[in-house]
Length: 141
Image (tube, rainbow, N blue to C red; front, side):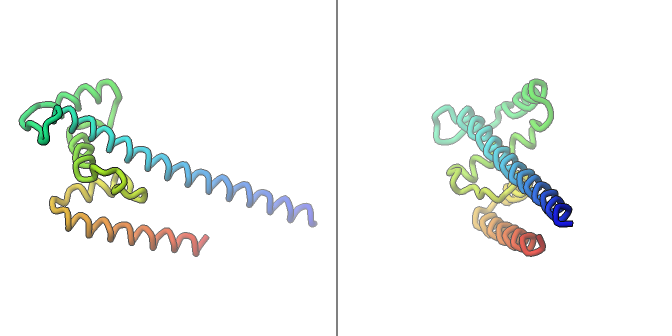
């Protein structure tokens, strides 16, 4: 009987370890995508500005990039997404200000807010809700 109990415990340990690893991998993957989109935004802004403090608007850069990147890399590079990548870099030019808890979906919603103070408020609210949610998950685990 003891061998069966030990074996059952072994199964639970392995399943728990796998689930923890999957969650960690998912978090790292989401974080890396946010950092990648931020870097793409940086490339776009630096190209647009060409060393100037402000960029020259009216160019068809995002339309052309969208077409070429979509052709070369597939989905995810429509004009709207490129605008958000660019905005992500502009609004969080110091990458240290970009919370590791926010997903790309969170950022898109926050980037829709024009006013920095309002965006900051909702960002803090989002982080608070996420923190509470994570805490509750740990309690129920």
